[in-house]
Structure formats: structure tokens, C-alpha cells
Length: 194
Image (cartoon, rainbow, N blue to C red; front, side, top):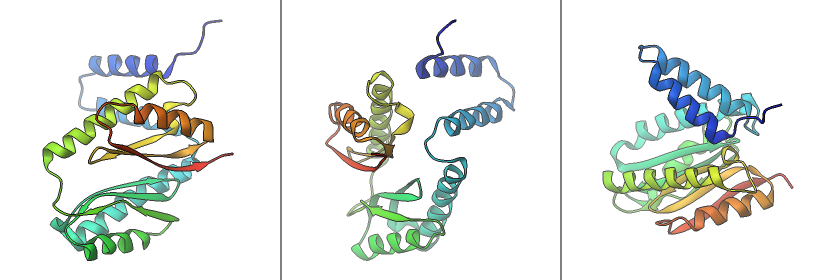
């Protein structure tokens, strides 16, 4: 009996298959398949996974509708717990963002990690995206936890880790993230299973 494919092998096969499909409907098929794979191996139920997606969408709409260009905010929901990262022009705006997000149906808790000050530049945001990608890639080779059980968000070089994990998994993920070049600090926002 042959061993199962690793997550890395599955990703490589998916990318290879995607490059072959050049029709207009390919992104829909690939996106749907990727979501199905993520949900199937997620520790959240399918309902909570969908709730998290809805919370992010509703919260962003509320925040942008009320504050517009006064904020640069990333809203990440995991198991109905929401991380707010980014910048607000004033403390009142920062607190207002938290109030808006807290009012979204289904939100259990809000971690407001927004800073007060100038909004991040495109270059800074790109660097954060790059760091997130590097940390996630390093997770694929890590031992002690599954990469898809830990959500990674980076803001101003600070890496936030979310997920439903055992303490040993949290420690392993934190070790990998904290030893990644360019990461200034790691903030653990895990829910522990043990």
C-alpha cells in the first residue's frame, strides 16, 4: 500500500493541475476544491468555518462604512474569535472599530491589536504578506503540528498565531515563527485543546 500524499505534495499537484486548466471556469473549480480540502482538515466545524468567513465580511463592511479611510484594518476570525490588526488614525477610531466588530452577530471575542498612528504603506503591507508566506512555508516542513491548524497574520513585522491547538503544537508553531528572519515578535492567540 502506498503512503498518503503529504500536504506539500498535494499543493504541488494542485498548482500543476491549475496550470493545465486555462479556461475561465478553472478558478472556480480550483477555489472550490481548495476550500473543500481546507474545511475537511480544519478543527472547526463546517458551520463555524462559514461563520468565520461571514464575520470577516460583515465586520469589514461595518468598519469601512463607518470609518472609511481613517483605518487600515485586517479582520481575521477563527472559531468566532476576531483579531483586529492594522492602524487607526486616532484612539477613538481604534475603539470604534472594536465596537463595530463586537456588534457583528456570532462574534465571541475581539483581540484589538490595532495601533494608533499613520496608516501602513503599500510597501509595509507587502512586506507583511511576504513574511506571512514565509512563515506558512516554514510550517510545511515543521514537526509537531499540522500547518493548516495554525492561522498566520502579520502586521508591522509582528506575527499573530491563531488556531485550536494543543500546547505542544502552539510551542512548535511559535518556535518556527519566532525564528523566521524579519519577524519582530510573535503573539499567540490560540485556543488550547488540552
